[in-house]
Image 1 (cartoon, rainbow, N blue to C red):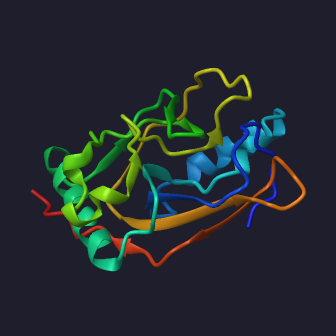
Image 2: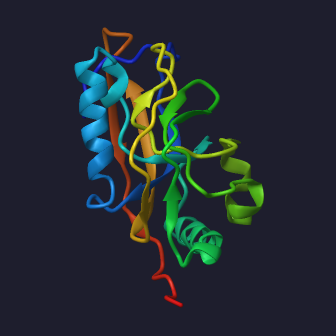
Length: 186
């Protein structure tokens, strides 16, 4: 659960996402960047888990759908030796009602990446996923961070909703992780 402020306005209902979460060792520099953003007055720096939104969905993916998606994501990293790369220049990715600010990933996402059985659940696929260090809208300017890369990551369902009695604080729950298959090292 996180109780930081968020400047976006969303309907008081649970929103569901499919997220990519890098191994915690890979995202240490992003945690430090989030701390600096928060200290500078950007309260949305801790309103969302440090992860990349791959899709906004109507219902959670089942375990098999997550496994298929994890294999698809691993295939997308084939040209980079199995690594997901995060660019140093932060940008914004959009879902239907939230905007995510962070370094863009080298993953080209579209409906073909997702399992056929889950396509009816897809509501929105951000054109270029970003590792969310803050929710956009707080007059965040494109910042630059240290480029990062990672092989170890997992896919999970995420449910997020505003806490009762406030427009700015969120509660979230992450589902069971499905780790990306090991990358073949060439």
